Image 1 (cartoon, rainbow, N blue to C red):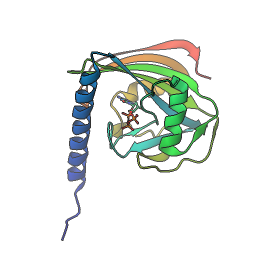
Image 2: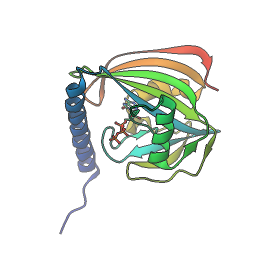
Image 3: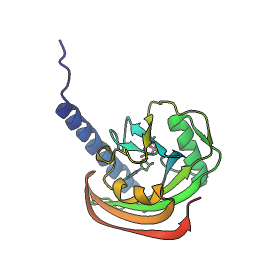
Length: 192
Ligand SMILES: Nc1ncnc2c1[nH]c(=O)n2[C@H]1C[C@H](O)[C@@H](COP(=O)(O)OP(=O)(O)OP(=O)(O)O)O1
């Protein structure tokens, strides 16, 4: 008979899955590196007064971490259209409008490709969030954001976003958990 996994074993499995996803990403991005040194991605947060929608990533890059909704921008697609598409695909929500919140560049040791992540929020949306094969959505109070189960950079730039301040930031990672270098600067404009 199969034995239930302990919390430690589940964490270890998730860590191994994440390391594998990173290895796959490094392999595929270095393959493309002669053509493009930047990969453009989106990240969208649905907001309501006092709370924010996060999604538990169920597979692939960032598996086992709470995050916003987003992914790669496709060829011929604008960044905002890509952001709206990923939000709809990953949790069934349609953003009527998006606010630009931040721009983050991520570098990973051993990978020549920089991930350029465009961060948005929306207060103006249709449909209730639903679970999909990629994400399990859940509302969190702005003071209960689970930073211990998120990308380690999030705790540094979330406060800017939650306070309605635009920002630009840079994080250099070794593996999935260690930040070697970083900077963040707030821009003067408000997000909405
Ligand atoms: N460090 C960090 N903090 C916060 N958010 C992120 C990171 N690194 C990241 O990549 N992200 C965000 C940016 C994107 O929203 C996702 C990653 O997108 P990904 O799942 O690789 O893209 P998809 O196009 O959905 O992938 P597939 O569906 O093709 O597997 O995480």
